[in-house]
Amino acid sequence: MLPIILVAPHASSVIPEPLRGRYALDDKEIWQCSDRFTDELNEFTCLYAKHAAEVNRLVCDMNRAPNAQDAFREFDFYGKRVFNDGKEFTLNEKENLLMQYWYPFHQEIVHSIQGLDEEGAEVILLVDYHNTAGDHALNINNDYMASMILSNLGSEDAYENQEGVSIPYNYLFELQDFIGEALGISAEINRIYHGGYNLYWYTHLKNILNLKAKIYAIQIEYNLDYVFNPISKIFDRKALEIMQKTLNEGLASMYENILVQEGTSHNKEARISY
Picture (cartoon, helix red, strand yellow):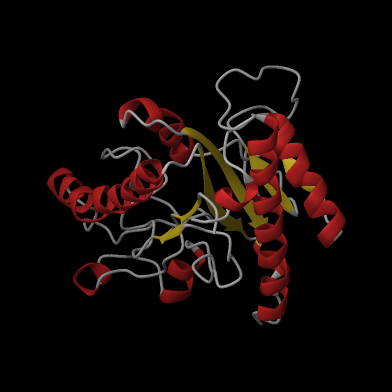
């Protein structure tokens, strides 16, 4: 294992039973509001820790700022209202849901980071793991989901502005090339998705937690249609395994290269001992 933590903030399709009757969406529509299968992570053998959300983003979104405005949705991806009339969460309920789900989820991530820091990791890599179906437009430009998108809070033009990025572009380029060669698909950089709230949060943790380790973070978003046929509705587990093995190898290779390029003191045997 390596000092790599994977977070799947939208993995769950679960709506706790006491809340279920308040939603205008049926079970399929609620399922579509999750990043399906992102909690199936068996092929990620390089990870120190993995954290998958236990409730749907429609309960509260683990990749949004923890406040009543940002963490709660009124409409799904297809423009349908989430709640039955008069059944929306009150401000008090939103605050309670954040305390019940959002803060414990992120505190678990903090514990993993602190554990690595205490063990002497010099660089900690955080991976925010998502997918998006290719059956709907994603923005006002009517762009549809690419094959895969790698994000670091930057722009599509790596030479435009590198201030505030969550990981340097050269490491993204390495992972992009690895994916292209291994899977034969094009991984875009910061196209449509530039990185969500969690990437901003990760980049501030070194100072917030007074860590000795350097923190790098990347968001990976893959096209759901590669593992779930939108016409037959058949889940292709073999395709998921192939993709995960490739990402696992690519992340491990990228991490090792980060240590080499940044001149950290650990030798290879020490680096893989986590």
